[in-house]
Length: 446
Figure 1: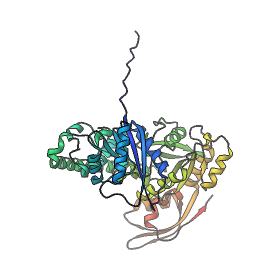
Figure 2: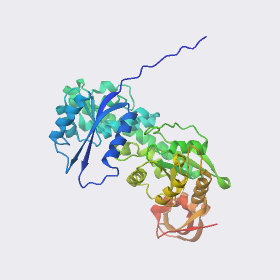
Figure 3: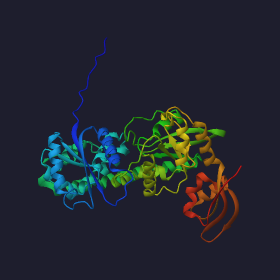
Figure 4: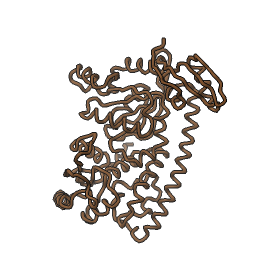
């Protein structure tokens, strides 16, 4: 019997006009042109069609409309000329800015900002119950202060975990104008419920991590700018099948796989959500449980797309985010990915000059894996750190772990706990740092 092929009709893509604002004297990781190019990639990921863009340079944002009143008129005229349906800003707009711009641009155009766009992409890509909860919380916390006559009533969200109303969910005209207070109370109740559910998820993850620690298998977290190749690297190392796509935020939910290392060792590798400049604070807060997977790791593999023209700026954005989630104290191994794209092999050596102590690889072609795995093994199992710690008696697991896997030089029991001097594997350093009593010196131990 012949199979019947059903062709799905592609949804029309909203025509979108981009707006970037550069403030004099304010340092940015990316240039205005590069930032707008990244915004365009985000827009394509969300299913938008870019029809034009405009840039304004200001000393400070206009308190009423963010951009100057003359620029508003110019953009409105250009957007009408290009039949644009969406005006997309490269920065997060305040509720006041958004309300005023919606009024000035008129009923036929929706006003979105970078934060709303990223939240929508996350809503499209969240596959698990946890991911949907996290995205829905972030969306509601973003929308709560923005409730106006433009609010789409909560009935549109019925049954849609993750708030998957699409990019148009912010800025669509809806019937909620007369019951804003009811909507606010409903949203606040929903936010409280989501936070409670995510605390349960967090507690479950904590129990899971506690069991994982008992296995004595170290955890390696893959971090990096979105689309740097983390999922491809995990697939190649673990022969796994993590979803990979050439788009921003292709995977959100953390995936953990066991990877065999030289010398009969092993480690658990966790792929995490990609970072990006101007990552919305709502997402950082909502994804706290997921990001704790990073903070709990014993080694971070910072994967960088070394062929990207903004590789240095992207690396800086990752370091800033690690500091924001208090994971910047964990040992980091920098991995320069996609060297197979260099026409000249010597370019890899040039790239290494800009990133000292890095390892150059191709996750796709599995080039440089011997050096990568050997370096990971050395950092996890062979590098010892001299440390002096004061461990409270309730930290019995850490006391036992020091004796089992460390080299103890001095032990003294006090009224408050146990003082230990000695050496521990570098991968355990993050666990003991809160109890550190002295300076540490890293050394090689055979």
